[in-house]
Length: 201
Image (cartoon, rainbow, N blue to C red; front, side, top):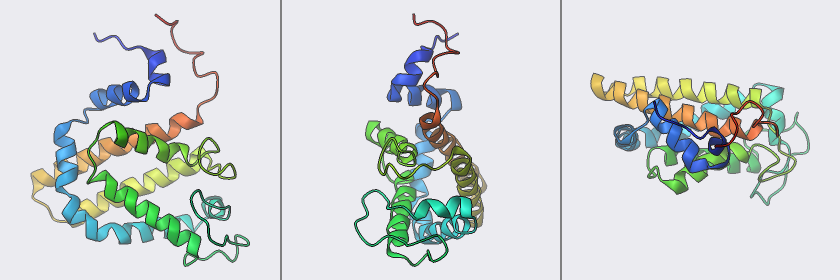
């Protein structure tokens, strides 16, 4: 039985992700499968981005988070929720970010910098990073990740890959999105996250 320093999981990002990768089984073969899918998925990224924003704009609980100024955006901001259209300059800015994120998943090496990037994806949706006005509830982040996971699955199945490659690619994305989900939810933990942990060794 392998011993895990549970307190270190809370404070050491690379240790946490290393543990998760080992437990889930996200290995070099999965990374290779993700990278191998890059040329096939890249042309489909704009469509995925559009589908995500169509879904986000379908509910006030998700659309309202696009009214405040977004981190890194310097242009005009929307005046209110009712008049905010997907064509707005700030939404186009956000869509470019999402497109780069999706491209990063299938092109970048899964090293320490990538881990920090994935972690920031979670943190940037809270007041802990980026805009202090932006505080997306966890339920909305989970809803988004569930939608993205299903959209990616449908996209992979539509590629008509050889069966073995299709399975490998889908499993790789499944593991990756669980890793990403953890790096989102960890930023919603309360300050007493140590309460249920064993005493430090």
